[in-house]
Image 1 (cartoon, rainbow, N blue to C red):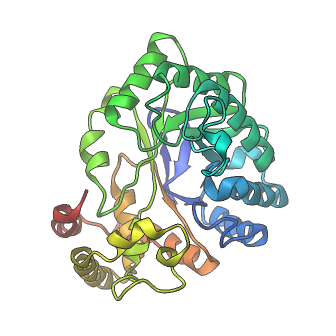
Image 2: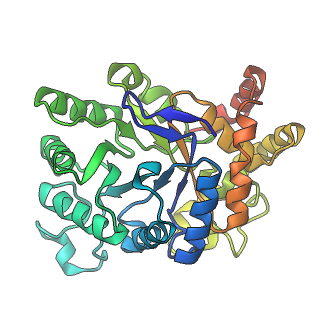
Length: 331
């Protein structure tokens, strides 16, 4: 496992990390989480990603219980969470008013959200906090001041964004710079062989201009790049889970299915799985600080960890071959 600086910050993250979206609480309880976190740490992973909205806060609870049981020195691991959607259900009539509404980055929500995450995760501080989506109804300077204050108060160490546009990230950075506030240092975008334009094109100037780091999610395109969806959506897969219907169109895309078959042939020549190939491809990009992987069971985690050995095998020629297949289909 190699370690990379998070943009221009001094924080170093493992090139692969472990996230909890979909899995924790829904598929992984605290005992299973504890086992997988221990295996991940033994393999060199030091970064564990979470979010307030995952399983309505219960993902943070599961991860927090695992951390407490493992009794790791706090210096040895990096943990993140994200804020935007809140915890109130969408059919809660209170969620639409000016104070309690969901989908916000206003100061009131953010300053209470960090306190809630600290309680659920049983931590004194969180290393990385993200604005999970942009909020067009809250002035960016209000959000920037609130995120900076979390750091000043010692509740967080670094902050960043997730799925923000390049213009929004630059605006936040410039506000922080102008007012001598803590600047955003990281963006968390989706990045995989079928989703690459934002990382490779839209953000291109931000890496040098403001030193933006990346912790990317969905290296397997929600499972499409595992090859298991080539013949439909298995009943026990993520695509069949309640609330994941938005993935159906992408997972059933015939052209992408044909591309996955070509990736599988390349993976076979390398002696790895197509999932390991896809993860290694994402990690090969030097702009990526860490690739966030996910697993619902230990065997998946162990298989994903094998991607570390594939990164060095991705020659310029192999990357070009993968690009030729994926670029025409990529968003």
